[in-house]
Length: 202
Image (cartoon, rainbow, N blue to C red; front, top):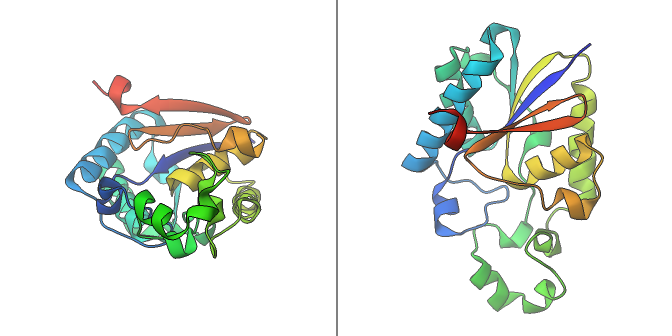
């Protein structure tokens, strides 16, 4: 069986626009975020053919579900058939959720020592470990084996790790994968193809 997974990220949220790290907290999409998802969905529609042949599986967090609803409206997919899967939720940053980097640095300066732009998320005092996220996305990939056409709506950091697991990358490589709200990815035959609304839609 040839399996195809399209992996999408939710649109920009209010917290994103404020530089606040959400983790498992939530904030609604901004107007720009709504426009991003509309554009992504229109581009996706060009590639999938009959939407009824696809399953849409979303993180249960509000920003992903709001994005999924926009996608469904554009594709002509019944929103009540969207499957929620907790394994696609964003990485928990524990006590750092809702804070800016400046606020984190002021309160937990020692925890950010010896970290970089890509791995600091995992130093939160009560956040989720990389291994834990890797295990849950691997479990999700295993659970959809045998399903041919999947559209997954997830998050920035989780999406990086999921693509890393799918292509068997080391942690340092996976955490440096591109993350943007103007792109989505096609996962097929353990390869990843990138699609950008910036270049492809117009």
